[in-house]
Length: 333
Image (cartoon, rainbow, N blue to C red; front, side, top):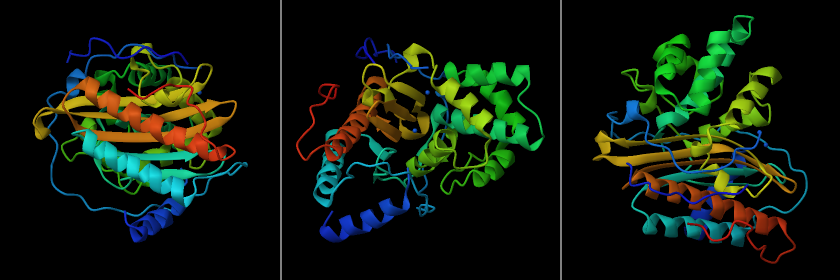
């Protein structure tokens, strides 16, 4: 889909290591109206003053998942090493930490970098809150009420923080969130003990698990609930349609949820995250990129978009006839 570059954003391994990563990636298995990209929106105001714990958190393994392989070639060892090297170069080129997990649903190929590392979610947690709201309603034998649907739309399409406060309480606050994410199969996602939903910590691996629940159907949600959630993700406000959409071309279906905020607990540096789905005639991706430590909003967006584009372009090349595939997106910003 056509994209406009961000404007006026001043608003403010060794062979052994590669083998180990390949084993982990094998355990990871990481496919809605099209969102047109536009300018970037202002930061989530309710999250600006969020304080997060900076303590070290343990890593956790991926739960075994499998993905549908429908033909085509996956990343070979040399291509995987090259892409891993590019991710390490990006670490040196950008001041922020980041993690990425991607699955090509056409081939079953996966790629990740730092997928077990925990990052603050900012508004990306709203997608999990929506899934838990839908799950709770199903457990109660009902659909969402008209009020819940209105609030869910505001939360996902417009990233409204006030309505998210109410829906977070509706799912049972931190206790409900904790039990809910375990039911979804998450292994590295935890709420902030003070009840600040934007201070939830998560991993790229868990975010791809959530995308698989919504787009592949692996998990406890009904087809109706999954379709409802996808519809909201695929109709986010145009000014918020950045991030994952950097891996799209005109005519693609894109569903996403982004999160962005400066954090006082990290010297005012920015958390910028993007998770979602991109699908076209010859490609279909689940993508999660989490980042923390960018100097400003624009820098954070540029980083996550470059990571998205770099990984999916490499996967497109791997699916080809062995030669490089010219990127329809042009150079990454």
